[in-house]
Image 1: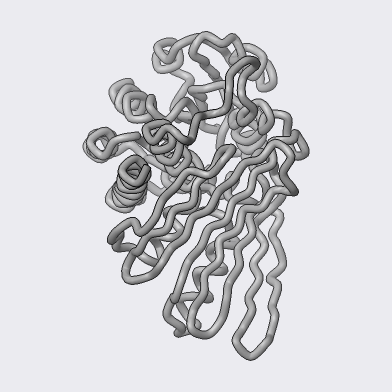
Image 2 (image 1 turned 180 degrees about the vertical axis):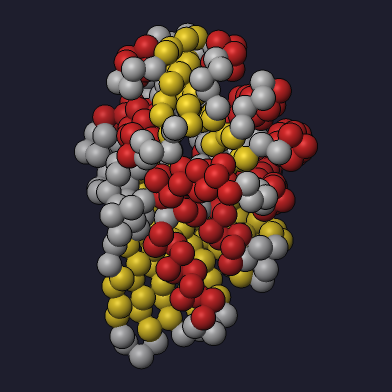
Length: 343
């Protein structure tokens, strides 16, 4: 029998990503309950799968049909909802990133899962993308040390890929754009975007440069974005993101340069199922290799990883999950402090 899934949250990520993904894995999972925070959206989403709906998390956690909890709520609620799910005796959790907005919150959530033996997967879909596994294999076998890493992200909120992108990033009617000349606001924007967008790729960067050292520069970009540079394991890392209402096609690319070649991993735009990332290898001798994309994507892979944990009973790498969030939050905190101090 498939495991019953209860979904906390009824936003665009649930509608466009998680519900379709679970539907593709019908042998392993079935959505049985969807809850929202009072928006009323849970009812229409639950109707797509014949699931129950409710407002607030209490009914979902009391539902005996729910074995697995998918936490897709705002990040500030994640650690408390992990604790509540563990206390309710749920077997497994898939939590959107980050698992907490503070290191103390992350440590408490991880400790609770470890003590109860609850399987935990964090929804880092780029890390689970099969193309990243291919790229990582090349980097580990090519013999060339990593010289630099960059992540470039351009999101055009024009509805080209999904209407929810427009809803997510256009200011509300009558609400002015963030005043980036105010250092406190600029610092808050940088921290929010690092923990909300850069968090997709920080586990990949940490895979290659695990020891965070220091932030070199950080600033907010108008109308919404950031440019951050830091050093990790002696490697310079640059993170650049900009969102423009009239922007060009979306670009989400991680570039790794070694002393022998350049590797580009270009991920599909957000809110679509378009298969794996594209991998392009450009060698110093001029050879240009493009690896074929796969039909499967990181969203499917992360749910399959949860299914394997449930079936095999293998131990969860709790410390790796904790190190990911420590790295990300330290980066976000130092970058936001630098933005505020510089301004």
